[in-house]
Image 1 (tube, rainbow, N blue to C red):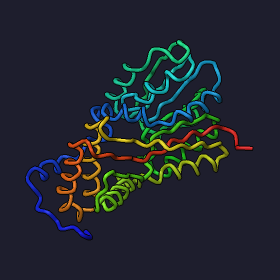
Image 2: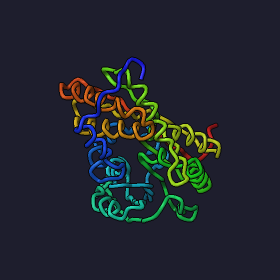
Image 3: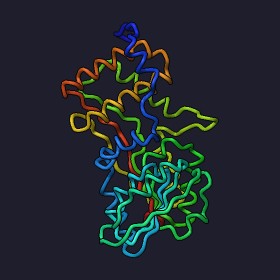
Image 4: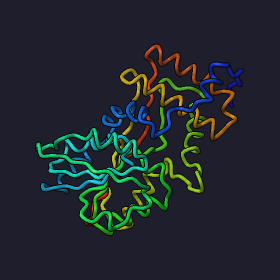
Length: 293
């Protein structure tokens, strides 16, 4: 790396590096990130959504719901009664999500939940019949272009609004910065765009790709930035995210591995002093039926 010399890999780094950061669907990771997610999501899009939905009963389908953080954040901001249909491949996560949904919406009317186990690829226009809203959180960037196209097509055909939050946008900034920040950020973005089992993931291209997909089908698109701002307020999340971020970068670009131990230690030393701040860019999208006039 320019201006850097590779450091010997210490036993401590080797041990930690052999265990990647929390898998993105692990309940522990989802619980750790939930407060930061709630703080980051763009509330101005919810204001637009509420005006569009009006009053009356709602049926909400939450795709890739995980432990249900989207429902816990959004249901209390919408009038009811509400019935949430929680979609995920993981039945254990579905059970957690259903058991921890809010009891009532913004107007005190009841919120109920049912679960649907399966892949997003099985979603059809029939499934969306009678659906008031489709939601997803931190999902688009782990989908393919074909999957996002299919989702946009189904929502447009059925006239179903979609609120899609916290898609990785490929923007990471540290304060203070480090000479290797750009190298690791670039490698991480490449990792997000990797091909898994023949599926090429959109990664940080997801927000722009999804916006185009929905607009091209005649839907009105509202976009807002929803960055994580990590620092003293969420030290455990910052450290775990940083470790996973570096691990993913090294997996994608092994040439970085000899530099990773010292790079991480510099970050953690600053973090221990309360001086590290990371801004992780995300984008929220709200697609509404009906083209802009």
